[in-house]
Length: 168
Image (cartoon, rainbow, N blue to C red; front, side, top):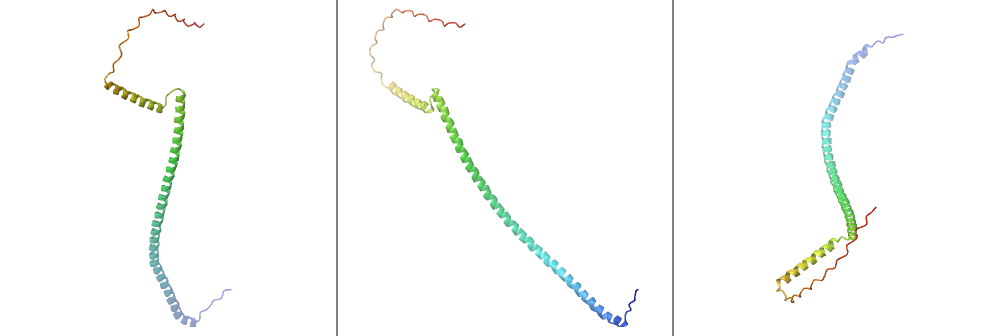
């Protein structure tokens, strides 16, 4: 069963001061919350701005470090490329030398003069030309009297060469 609770008139009389105290307390709590919210908002924007500034600073530092490392990596790659290029050109030089030696040897086996031999021959020809020019400039020597030509002897007929044999 349901029982009804009746309020005392005494509690009703005490009610207004108690409700006023509760209302005042609730009002103070509400105002404290609003104050905390306002302070958090103000400090939050300051904290947010400080975080943004710190983020910008960190970004600049990381970009500087990244650029430095990129420059180091680029320099190392250029150095490695140069070394590889030098090694490759050295290998090509060796291969070229081997090829030239073999071609010179083959030409020598065929009886062709080498470049050194041709240069020596050219130098010798130049010396001979110089000597001839010097001799041309000097007066001619007396030449001995001409010897009478020998009388022509009878020409003997040469036997005819045999015709090559015909092939069947």
